[in-house]
Length: 264
Image 1: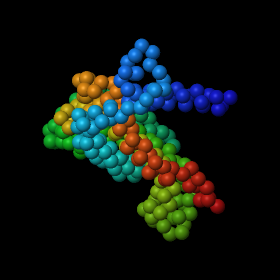
Image 2: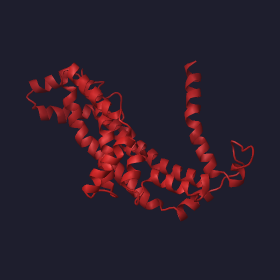
Image 3: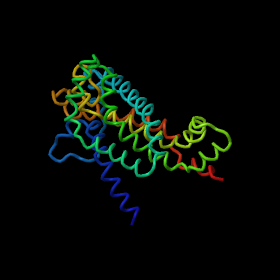
Image 4: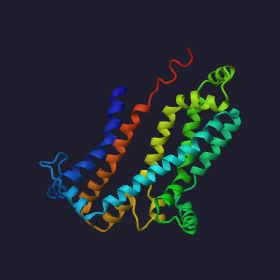
């Protein structure tokens, strides 16, 4: 029964991605007919060729990559010590801080986009990867901190106490014991920060109307009818590929058995 439910959920999630590939790869004559087939009779790369020749994909790709990695770095540099500190507080205090983190996520992004853009313009950071990254980090960091708070709270306190008994300082205990044990959660947080930045649209659109990230570029070209729906889907597939590569590279750090022998 569970396998059937998982199969239905998987089909529901993956079917839009399947349609994305079908529209991008099928000839245009098959896409817009009255009853299009779910399996095209032939495959065409014309949409991808059109995107590479007519869209300024290179600059958008490098801007998105630069922004996403800066956001990931900011969230880890600020989020790791913040989440570690919160995790060591009394439960009620830590719970209150986590609630405050979620309250910041309740504000619609569109409401803070203009004030953030005004600050970035005054700082001269508009139309830059650094400005976009700082703005995105302000909305991504609370969620990433919450993820890592849960990670640090799963580490048994007696490991830290044993290290202190053996003469390790607080910093040594953190860097040598707790940080390596939290690597799985930190890797998940890093992937989430990267993905949130990679997909973010509103702040990137407001802060950088001239130098476009990939989500903004897809919107820009698709709304102007350049290449049609097939070209937009081909562009979206190109946007998915780096995500798959990043997840595959970081997947080796996602280990659930990292605490298996720690308490023996």
